[in-house]
Length: 283
Image (cartoon, rainbow, N blue to C red):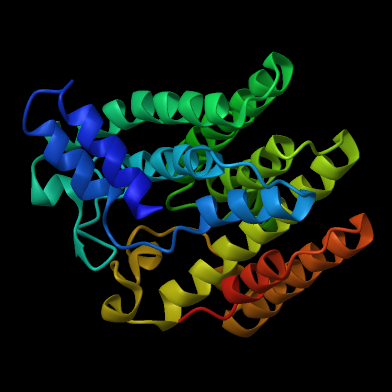
C-alpha cells in the first residue's frame, strides 16, 4: 500500500506548486494502521476477487482518510499537534499549506479511484456505484457531516444514540464503504453488499468506541497522538457515558456482531475476522 501511495504522491507532485507536494507526501506516507485499504482488499478477496488493481481502489480510500486527518487536526477543528507519532501536518508545515494539501488529496483520491476502476475493468454501472460509495461516505451524510456534528457537540453531554450517530458518520461510514467497495469490485450481490456494510458499520463503531477507551487510558506515546484530548475539548464519549469497562464491553460486543454477520452471509475471511478482533484489542 505504501508503494501505491508513494507512486501517486510522486505523480501528483508535478501538478502542484511547492510546498504542497511535500505536505501531501508527509500526510500520505506517515506510519498508520492502513485499516481502511486493508478492509477493501479483504472484502474483495472474501467475495472471490482475484484480478489485479484492487490496491489502487483501496488506496483511494486511504487518501480520503488521510485528507480527513489533516483537516481534523487544524486549529479551527480539533487543534491537535500530534498524529501518528509526529507533528500534525499544519505543525510540520503551516495551516495554509495543510489546508491546501487536504484539498489536493480529495482530488487525488478521485484520480486514484479512477485508475483502480480502469485496471479492474468493471462495467460502467458498477464503477458508478463504487464511486458513489466512497464519496457518499466522505460527504455530508458521512465523514464530513460527522465531523460537523462532533464539533457542534463540544461541551454538551450527548445521549448514547446521538453519540453513536456521530461516530457512525465520522468514522463508521468510510470503514463501511471500504468493505462495500471491495465486495462490489469482486461482484458482490446486493445482499452480500449489505452484509459487508453491516460488518463495516459494526467494526467502525467498535473502532471509535475503543478509541474513546484508549483516549482515556493510554499515553500520548502509546497512541501516537495527544491522549486525553476528548476531556480537554469536553466531548461526549462512550467512556463518559458508560465508564471504561462498559465502553470496552460494548466495543467487543459490536466486533463480535460484525463477525456473526460474515458467518450468516457465508463469507469466509480470516482477515476480516482478525481485523474485527484487532480493533478492540489494539494497544
